[in-house]
Amino acid sequence: MTYTTQFHNGTELNRLYENDRPIHEWYRFVLSFPPHLVRDYVEKFGLGKGQIILDPFCGTGTTLVEAKKLGIKSVGVEANAMAHFAASVKTDWEIEPDELADLGQEISNQITVASLEKILSSDSSYFDITVFSGELRAFGVEQSKLLIKNSISPLPLHKVLTLLDGIERHKAKKLRNHAKLALAKQTVKEISNLRFGPEIGVGKLKVDAPVLSPWLTALESMVSDLQEFRAFSDTPATVFSADARDISRHLTPGSIDAVITSPPYPNEKDYSRTTRLESVLLGFISSRKDLRRQKQRFIRSNSRGVYKLDTDHSWVEDVPRVQALANSIEQRRLELGKTSGFEKQYAKVVRLYFGGMARHLSELRSLLRPGAKLAYVVGDQASYFRIMIRTGQIIAELAERLGYEVLDIDLFRTRFSTATKEHLREEVVLFQWNG
Image 1 (cartoon, rainbow, N blue to C red):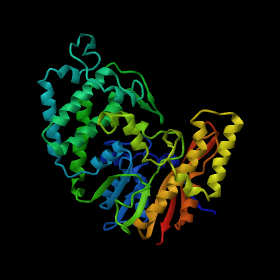
Image 2: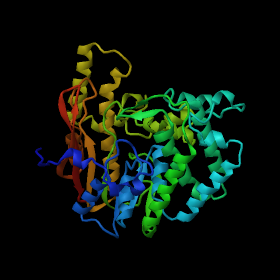
Image 3: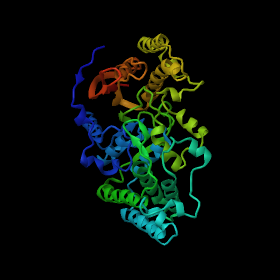
Image 4: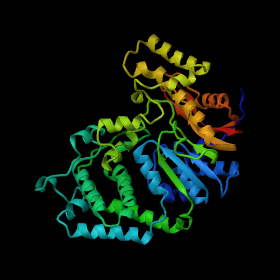
């Protein structure tokens, strides 16, 4: 099948505009798609009040926040507990901004009169850890095993955990989640040793880092944004913690007018690592068992998230293009003599990924109103022995097989692959459910 393609300036399309930062900047994935892309498709689809937008891979809530700003009801589904938490907080605009500002001041005052004042407010030139007589707070053994080594240094971690304890003890329960999200954001961005480029890694180790002041800065931004957008607080936005392949139990049949989303891409990125530090910090995962349980709700998109009982591959057994792609990856592995456990999973990941997407699209059909339009932001990949995976084209074929009408494939942007020396396309696959 041939699709017309709309070409755009990739750099411009992927840029976060300054006026997009309110609410969205409370907490974002590094690889989040920009809010103005959501607005583009809201306009193209002719969506407005009285309709419902679904994001079944809602991440930290880009689609939901933008829909709320536009006064359009939205529903999100997210399997990553930390991302679900962030999306839930970012769409809760009903709290009083002044009360959130008061919380920050009250906790600051409590710290000021506490013995830990210097520890929480210090930088490396102010506090000498060698003369600290107390015991530093730290993660437990099981929690520490979940983290990338040296994600955060001992003293900054101690200060973060002390501040988190102060937040948890504060009397205003309805404000705690906003305060915790502000702390999670700044822990990763300002306090930890983590760096993103776009892979997550560890940069220069910080012996110490301010904690209280960055947290207060994040709270101040929240207060300012809530003052600006609180008039839209009554626009409903619901976020479910669920698997996108099994969402019909959460939503009303025939209730969705449009879908704007970006599922994981088939590559070797373990998406759970991106949020690992803050997930452990806020208690969403505390053990390998917790992590496994969470990852089992993800679309299988990398070899570190494959399990023996997975069956999604059965959804694409009769799709020649997927089978040929998986077979070519396995053949390349044999030719190269690659024998690691992860490399042996590459062909299986491809089958599971596209099978999972087919299962998701099949599950979605009962939730859509006739005429519902869908936009899926996806990207070509070449992670598996440099064999090109044309993700958008394959998802378009799967959608068509399941009864959707494929409308177009828009080019969102291109990325140059140093491995293949080719430009990888990120595209928006557009299709419609006619019932």
